[in-house]
Length: 246
Length: 87
Image (cartoon, rainbow over all chains, first blue to last red):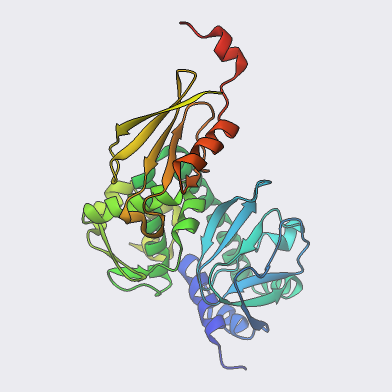
């Protein structure tokens, strides 16, 4: 057996955050064979309309999925974190209906579709974890519709911060009181339907309210209860095992 | 289209702005950006328009002349509204 790499560890940790894995499931995941690759900004990972034959496993984050509009602007659909397989839906939907993009150089692994299908068939626990992952993906998209359609700027961005913090924490990738925000204000704007001017003002308002503080790229959460209240954040839609057990 | 710019104080961080009128009809609000926006400081942000649905595209202009040229080109008041508006 190969010694598990960071990529294997991240994938197992991600799946265990949303599903129960048996020791056999973990062993099968550790034996998974794939190559990692450094992807630079503006390099294509998956473009809308392509028929990929491999899935993209994120080793270092973040990365986003988006749709491109005819005028060249983007709507970001989701942010992904280390351990996420971004495009599990392409195992059965064939044609990608959106693109995958990055802003900072990223470590990405590519796993052939056939390998993942065989893994899910041979290890039902992993199959269930993949199922849960794609269903939770849809649950997050539902919450994002509410975010963009029904929340004003301050709770909208507060909600995104709450979500990223909660997800990073479940992957053991945050600090106790914050996380390193590797997103640009332009990306936050493209995810929340706000201009960069409004994103900048809103982050400033959240700082003035003593809910968050920025120290370089580190976003410190000063008042977690207050930030959740501002965002009306209920993490139930993330369906994390740690929260379900609580 | 004849455009008129009326200076106003606005409730944003820089405090300076213009109401933009087309033939007497308010069509847009321009706001000057403060040092909060670092390299965009001093530029003019199209905060709000009334002739199209506000979306996530908000242009930023270096000068008022550029703002005026863009508004004249893009924010047209429909002929129907001009002829049917109550006076």
